[in-house]
Image (cartoon, rainbow, N blue to C red; front, side, top):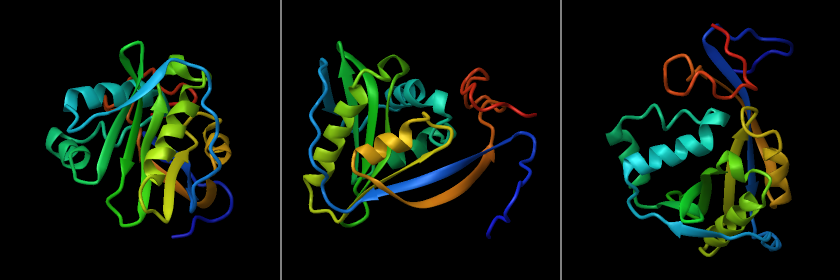
Length: 197
């Protein structure tokens, strides 16, 4: 379906975002790590309560809701699947960033989730995390690394991915139930996206 030019109404209780898909088909030039005391650790078979907590702390403000709506069996089937890698950005002994890579499709890697907690935005931690993400992804025989972001995300997200070497190749509209109305997300999350009941 093609959405016609002009305005299209979104029903009350719903949210809509423009989703931008970005990709790279060769390793980019390496960017220097910013100064900071960060490290990355791979989390094999992540505990569901750990994953849910970190996913919420990193993504709730940006309305990362799809994983929050999964039951435990559904979530475990994804994050424990062969070809999925989960990593945590560690700061002062605490997990403060999430990197999830999906290698299940041959010769490709999707950065499924990528982000840092609110207190680390603007510190260089995301650059450090992206450097590790790209090193990890391109250490394999790949033809493509890709990611998607949307207008609910940080306003600099697309520019950050482009500076990292990604180029946009697709745009979509996503419509979903507002997660703040069903308890999936806090009603005070994502103040940049108004609630319309």
